[in-house]
Image 1: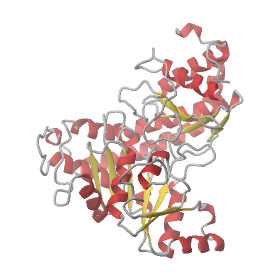
Image 2 (image 1 turned 120 degrees about the vertical axis):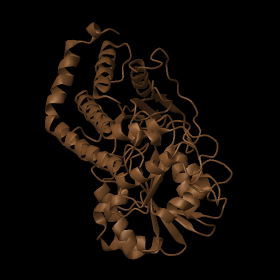
Image 3 (image 1 turned 90 degrees about the vertical axis):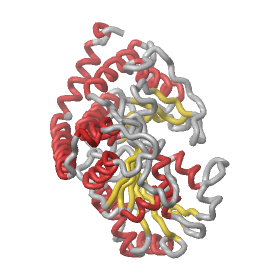
Image 4 (image 1 turned 180 degrees about the horizontal axis):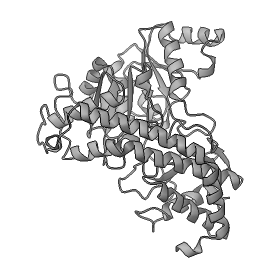
Length: 425
């Protein structure tokens, strides 16, 4: 589709939406500026030099570049320690390292934000039929949905007090909405209230936050608010679109050490593990991350405004304060969901000529349709859309290395839908 085929009504619709979001966009830019200062301060404080980009081979024993990156991440995330590793294959893997490092047979894991994301359910052992799950290793599981707005409510305190009794050892909080249209993403202030309540009831219980999709969307991170350990993926927000793989964990040093012993082996921990000559890209990706995340958030808000105007149900609403990069759009119909993903794929820079098909995905109970013509496979800081084929057939749009790419996709997708070529409205 050439630029001339985008109809004027679509252009006007998007232009009007942009104008209505001017003050919200200004707030996003201020947040990005704060986070950019934070990253620059950490680079300066730890005296980053070109020598930190040097390639290492073999064991990578005490690699100065890797150690500098860990310290910079720790400072940026307001944590005692951090570990950034190419050997971590995904956000789920990073979270699993935290869980296996912190929990022992006989302990109980408690989720206080309801059922966790699909892939983590299989790690716990409450879905699927995998071996080596926490359940198989003797860790029990409980869940509740604690409302952060009711942390002073006597019934909430009573419920949580019971749940935090022995053998509960670790509480997990999922920041992002995941594949749920009904659930809202938590702000770091809401997470702070939950953590304070947990620690007030039982200060010995650890708190882990799944920080995927939330990094740099706000001026703080969950570790600034008392989380003992957090984890995420480098091909989401903090990699800035340059990281080709990897994940990070940040938090208390003793807990980071435990997780690293699970990644490698006791006695090796974080002292080994090369970065496969990707050190410069990891540093540069982190440097770019505040700006890239701002573009993704602005793009999500623009999509929300346009799709709402077209009569679709969206979450969050366009002018709502953002706490992650995800925009949910409810299509209510399998075909419309797939059509939208086809449109996103068509306006991608890579594999624009292919058509995504719903399929089984490792770690998911339902078939999933995924659109993402990304430079890094599976990168969700690059513009992508996906959704499980189950009611209410919602797409979860995320990312956008540049705001202009999101806008181009939106122009083309809406025009194609209006023409009847690929209707999703």
